[in-house]
Length: 596
Image (cartoon, rainbow, N blue to C red):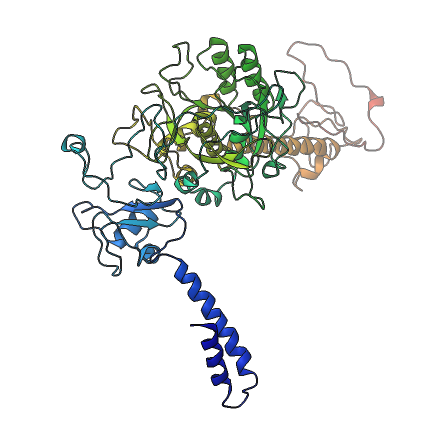
């Protein structure tokens, strides 16, 4: 519509009817809006979609457990209830699939369709990343012989040194880029590609935060320090320790890896960043063992672990500058574990020299491997040396010196995710010891293969929500064996209470007996019956002159009246004559008899 024609229509519309003086203005405004809208729509290609973003999605299989796939079954499997099938339908209705068709009927699903699922969906078979834009090539028979028909094939691992393909989140560099900085300055940037949110989608931290946010836990990061000036870390970074310089402060960072790990653990959203750490209410303690050179002395590694242990850290996250294969380092780690500290560190690689590595997956220790969105490893880990895996490729974190939110690659970021989950568990279950915490992280992980543990993935991908909610039969046993329990052990309140009750009862009985004895000493006759005692010993009272005591039997023959035979001599012993002066003219007071 041309402007002159539009004005003509406005004049005609406003020339008739009541209120025609106001109608031209209203019509002109509506006409202008229509023109602008038509121009905008004309400028967009047909079927244009909003910018692509990372999502959780599921590829519909031909069947599941022998039955055709349904929205209700998918919702029950990944969301816990079939009632949420409506949410899946709403997210996918009308979107063109790779075969050119669209989801219009909730009862009709076709194999190969990609269904976007809600953020809290969890389970084996979920994929994370950009929705595929073209159908994948048919796999070769030899490569698919071992694959299950209802399980999507994992993304291929990129060859070493291969350049990543544009738009494919599964093919990202497996090695973290080196930070760039001038001599004497800190790193200006440490990034690879644009950051993605696949790690947050995969771990679904919101499900875990209803049970724990890591409050009260101190996570020590033994690495390059932490940039404590960042707004996303305000209030969550302790001063820490700079082991290299001995300044006593570790809240500066030149290499950036320590800050990146801290962002994964405790970062909070700000005006310019939506990044949120996995344990946002925990506190991180930077222990700086490197400055501008990415190599730490053995003595600094040992001192860093000892400082973290002495400071009261409940979880220690070891960065890539710590060599766990060194004997001295291994001893420092063993000491930390003996003091009930969870120690999390990167799984050894094939290139790592063999040494007295402390671990064989023991209690209180957790070996972590990093993986990408398609399951590709962040490094060539030694087979069988991985306990669990966590996001380690193209993960969103923080940079130093004002670089803001960026993408990070490397095993230390996977270590940070696992350490944050350990903090969540320690906060939710304060009665668990370090060995029980690491065991909980292992057994609640999402399996990534049929083998458990797997040579590549160990027990699988960490699952924060499952680690906080699942009941484990092995935890019903007491942490301390009964033979080692004492009355002073705070973990046995029942035994202490019983002991206090017994002591109290004994004290009351003793006090009652003492009071009764004092009472009898003071007033012996108050507890006797009115008729007098029945088992009293010989009466020592003196009878009045001329007769016996009242109520006493008559004296035996040969006895002198008025005397009392209290001490009978042995036969043949001469007796003294009675003293007439011992008999009083008036009756004497009776002498009380004392009972023992």
